[in-house]
Figure 1 (spheres, helix red, strand yellow):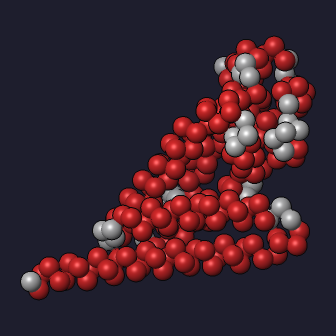
Figure 2: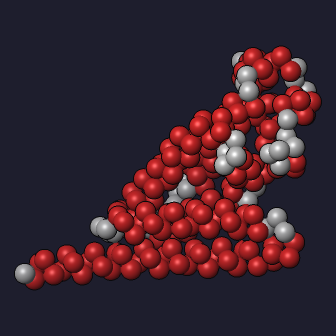
Figure 3: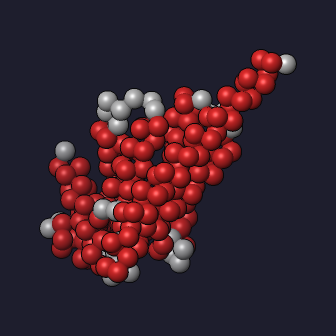
Amino acid sequence: MRRQTTRDKLLNATIECLHELGYHRTSTVIVTERAQVSRGSLLHQFPTKADLMVATARHIARQRGQAHIEGLKGVPVSIERMEKLVDILWGEVNSPSGIARIEIMLASRSEPELAAKYAPIVDEHSENHRRLIWALAKALGVRNRAPIDAMVQLYAASIRGLAIDALFPESRAHVQAAVELLKQALVDIIKREVAAARRAEMKVVEE
């Protein structure tokens, strides 16, 4: 229990540091000071900065998963559920933990050790996201998965980009309108694919 408490302190402190300072200014020394934990305790659990960042990314993923579970309670399988998913993702990405995850993602481009350890997490997260959206789209009547997977890639990347834009005051005022426009585009894609599936089914029946 005490070990988990220390771990949570370190991971939450890492999120704070990444959000406030960025990846390159975030050091294990600063994290231990912020968490009020000894450096020995940090090194015992996370021998390298890369290990700390990977654990932080997984911590953020768990938080995001919980946010989805809570946010979707009582929301039926419907277009409304798709819209809610966008709102939840935007809320998570546009938060300190969301910015922290973007910092880790960008840093992995130039940190070989981090890249090697972080890449599987990205793949796992992306696959889970595609599976989640496809399950919803399929339940709504979509039969062609390819455009849905492309849609997931588009909206996930767009949300990350908008979160970066929101860091700049001159862009912040327009970001929410862009999120709403993105949401409408996703709904239109789902409706288009549902209609296409229905037309295909009717054609089969007629033949």
